[in-house]
Image 1: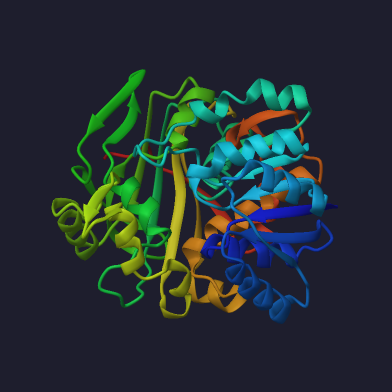
Image 2: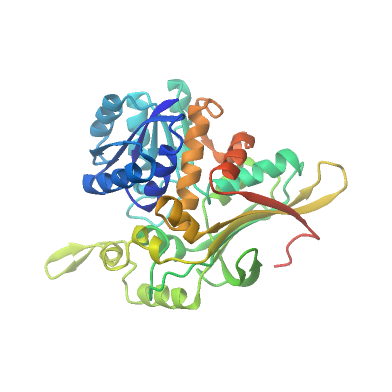
Length: 403
């Protein structure tokens, strides 16, 4: 249905491009571009071996708008799928506007020198994309992404309103490493160690990182400690569903991860400002990234399951009063690796990126402007989750969460 340019060659891109190649009736021609072309070539070789599909590769500095515009025009791409770093969101959106190309990403913009990710920078592009007749889809990963689509599906089919929502992300996988992050170490640590915010009572409530812990029994995994965190879908959900009284995000971490993260923070290794070492200026967290395992290399080592979903409470559509539903996916690390050569964390972000791009190419999500996932019709996206490796289930609970 359309030519696609994918920017970024990490673990998420590996999963997404494989799944695109498995849907060649939708993704008729794929080009994968990154600053390091050899990474693109390695993914392309794996895609060819596993699917028989040939994809093109290119070297690209994603911060160079002119170079991106030239590559969009050269490839004839209808959509640019941004699977690079969130620092690059705005320049890639600029390139799409100049080249006349639709845009999709999986994480919202974050300035490189400030650990603060918010949507307002990208929402400011609404009029530009609308006037250009182009669509920009923000946050088409799992969280954000599927978790927002889950909420919209519940509002369409189960609940007239959502009074409160908790997003729960559990990774029960084990890769045998002393310390490793599930996705880009720099982004992961900036996110985990940031001040916690959750939406309640019409305003943001703040607390210290890792200061609120709750044990929860996750389907397919069992009891895990989960910690209150800030995540970008809280901003978009509380904006687009103004009836929400409370929105929270929770993620599981083992004791060893918490210990390592706190020690690294205490000794300054997670700093994002430049320091001078031996006469050279370095950014500690970027240096740390080079020392830690590459999440894209952990697929063969990781065993166990991940479970991500929403627990939402609101007024039932059938008029029976307030109801609570738990909607979630369980994903097996080893099954993901067997299919595409990725662990479940990359898979659960890469597959929704493919499905979101497919919605645009199929014409389902092609309204000009800048849109978050909860603003779009959920039904075909939800159907594709079931048929492309991320089946979901929904259960009614006895009542609202008590934590």
